[in-house]
Image (cartoon, rainbow, N blue to C red; front, side):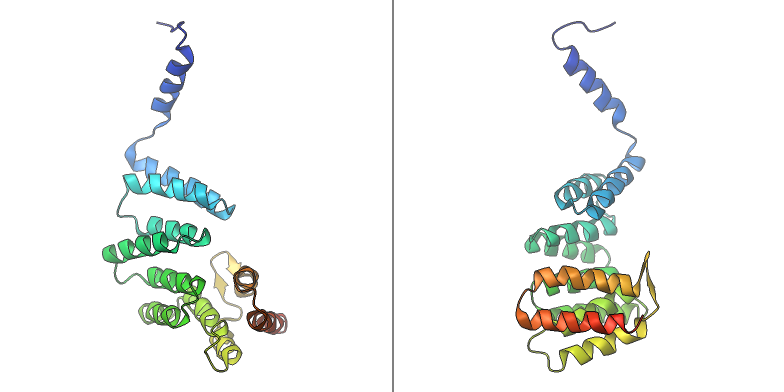
Amino acid sequence: MICISKRCLVCTLSYWLLIAIPTQAQDWQGYYQAGRQAHQQQDYQAAIAAYSQALALAPNEIKLYRLRAEAWQYLGYFKEAHQDIQTALALAPDKPALYEALGWLAIYEHDFPAARQALRQALRLDPEYHWARLNLGHAYLLDPQQPQAYALAIMTWRPMRGTPLGKLTFAQALSKDLKRLGLLFPDTASQALLDAAGTWLQHTE
């Protein structure tokens, strides 16, 4: 029977909403992929919405908390980011990626000792976890209380030259991070160290 009432549009929309909902096993992954796409496009609000939908269906998926925490972080919602990481750690206390996430978040909060502690824990769990080593270098470089910050950062990064980090080379990953951190730390001293790190990078690749 065809609906010809004034509510025809409502009926049609309701129908498409119903058939557009896939099975639960598929659904969270669809939201996850949508979140990843929005994340890569730096649409962090859309990413959070998609990850939240995925988590409603798959509340034990660690990577969803990890990614949503990073999206919260990039929007400046540090409390929410911490909550997601802690929830994930309660589910997987030995997951190196979660300590790396905690360290990266602490850098944004300018809590460099906490960042180094978390990142060292990630490396204790996985000595080959290069993202943790990359961020540990940042935690040295940007700490105004850390003597010889530049030298410590370079020593941390040097073994990584030529190392792939996912789809990025070490040079691409570090260059991307230096640009992002340059916006986050606009003070003159930090800019000088970031510029020095960029110069070092140009002469090592």
